[in-house]
Image 1: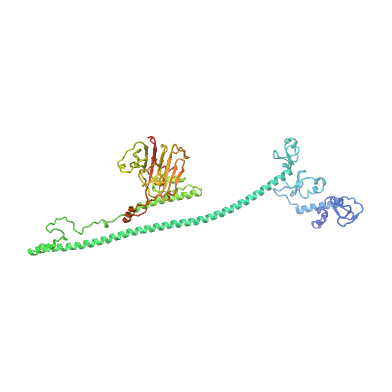
Image 2: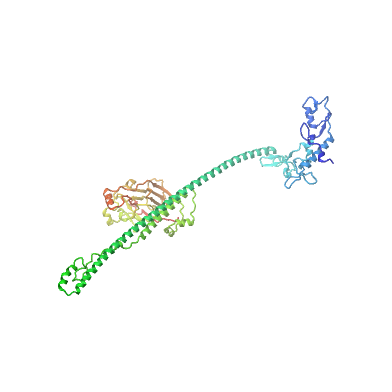
Length: 599
């Protein structure tokens, strides 16, 4: 057997026309070899019959016969080459050759007509035999049974677009007679085109989303950087507040120490004075004792007037005299004083105010970015005051709940300011229309003269406060807040120009308000100049007054008296809750309700 080194070179076994391995090789009279189909086609395209290599002309076209010996040598060489180079054994998962009897080689092609897969060696007939050349060869597939119709045992070479399935030509005469079918290759190209288009769109989406990811990361990084800067600024602000509190603490401690030093100095001076007076008393007492022991009448009578002077201890002859000696003084100025109660009260008020402000601030910040998180129990415990803990405070879910939990106050009506047409309940929580009582205080102009109004008993001149009024029992009513200087002789409903900020409910007025309005919440922020009215049941804002001016110009005489007494000239008038019922229906009423803080 010839060795691999004795085989001819590959170029000698290639056709010079098609540059492929000889298929049905024939020899010309000049001795050159060509594929029969190649040389026949070459001569058919030319008027001359000549050799393509040596250009030798032939008078007549030679009769060509297959060179069987050369063909066998070419096939043998191809077999040897396949076994030496491409004769790779099929691995698990790869398609094996169906013809190989021994170890199965890896298949190179699958024939859809023969329904078999071939290695390169056994594929040679399909490349040489004219009849086999017409067979459809595809890349190796292992599921050849899927390419055959189970019903008709024919090739699935059509695609039914109605049922969306592969069929054979016999199926078109059976189950798919009226359906539209296209060649499998046609549907394959269309599906491939759609997949290519979808792939392109997906690539664009990937590119867009990748760009969005990059931009989001950039914005997140920028947001983190800005947040860190804000956090540092906030820490600095709170550090400044702590420094201010420490400075105030130091000032308060220094004031107390100064008072203590002054009291100590006063006590020392008082002790010195008392010691001098005691020494003088001892001296006089010694002289008197000496006179008492003397028997000289003249000396006793001459010396006793000087010892019994007004600066002495009193009348010598009245030892039981109750006159107060000149050195007896009020010791209350130097008695020890306790400021702890004042400090505790002030600090508790500041702590409550600061806690409320921080809760409102934290809640507003949380709502501003749309991510309302539930406050953790530990955080809630730190934020709650003792009062909130006792009342079962729960984390607020909206702005109204925050207001209800942090700024609710107890409001009652002052019956002494009620118009004579109104009746205020004993507890000051209900207001009815009807004949009222004329209190003694009303004789001095403290009640509303012309309009059916009444004021709250307590006023507020700082901070925030909130109360709720049930208005469902009244057809026409008014509520809000007014300045303490509001005129008791006003006519009509008061306006901000009169120093009043009110909400009016009219039964016959075509109002856009909810006709089923039950309870109205009134919220006042004195520092910000805001008065807001809320529909408590719907938990919505009805209306707000903003930019309100609560301060007043102080009369000149009052300002002079304040300056003389050293009182601050800043005018912060009190705002009083304000209520009113229009009409004479005795069933109409307003009720001040308790604020529900845990809903």
